[in-house]
Amino acid sequence: MIEIVAPGLFTTVQDLGRYGYGALGVSPSGAADPVSLRIGNLLIGNPEWAPALEITLLGGKFLFREGALIALTGSDFGATIGSRPIENWAATVVAPGERLDLGPTRSGARCYLCVHGGIAVKPLLGSASTHILTGLGGFEGRPLKKGDVLPIGPAHEATPLAINAEVLERLKPRKILRATVAPQTRWFSSKSIDLFYGSVYRVTEESNRMGLRLEGPALETPQSGHMTSEGVSLGTIQVPAGGQPIILFVEQQTTGGYPKIANIISADLASVGQLRPRDDVRFDFVTPEAARALIREKEEILRSGALFR
Image 1 (cartoon, one colour):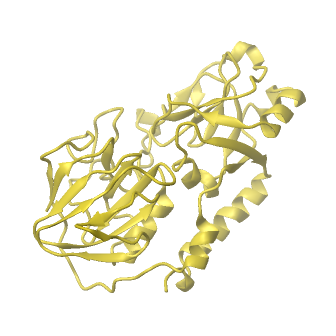
Image 2 (spheres, helix red, strand yellow):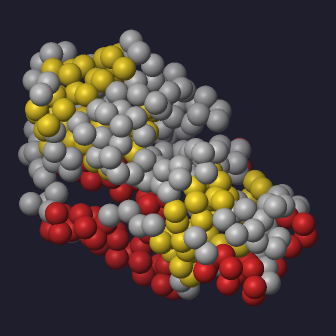
């Protein structure tokens, strides 16, 4: 069991999401930084999709009465057990009765607390992920609060691992996000497209797992920023009236009526999950062919024996 002594700002149970239910209005949810979750699970012998805790911006306090094998990945939250600092990106043994403490983030937006055996909550629509917008999945469909007790799945034999620092460097989050064409890219003037790719945008405070609102040079929006609603994809960049872009993210609405100027490539979606309010971001155009090559390259790294030391 994990007892939540202090939940932090926003802590939820997440796995790799539930796909195939967009037609029913349910977006995938899942880890905002799936690369960190996958690596964390592999470090402690879990399947890469095992449910873990996603901790956002401000950490919490987690008591392990029976002990556990854990891994922390993603951003650095200055984790300690007692007075002992805990290394990110490596398996760590927590003794019975010890408490893991995490402070405010020192780098990106989110870290992942993966536990050997996984967080044993009941799957819904094939996933244990918490979908805040609908109150589905996870632990009672909500962020964790003080006093919650989460069961851990059964343990099995596992070899604790640590990540290869050189490989980790190749996977670190980007602040220049690569994007490719979207369904309405051709609706935008060349001036607006050049402005979008040539400008710096800032992530606003009105950003969450549903979407990241950006602030920067206003883009000229076709059709006054409105169109007939249609299905939208993860990472699409809408431009509503007013010209300030919005990146749709893991708990996005499944349809939208704003023109879309670009779409973040799959290889960079984990980087979106590490963006904090007031972070600056830029965009770099790539072709669909290049986007496919980049996600293949990232998957090859994640499945390589060189990932761990």
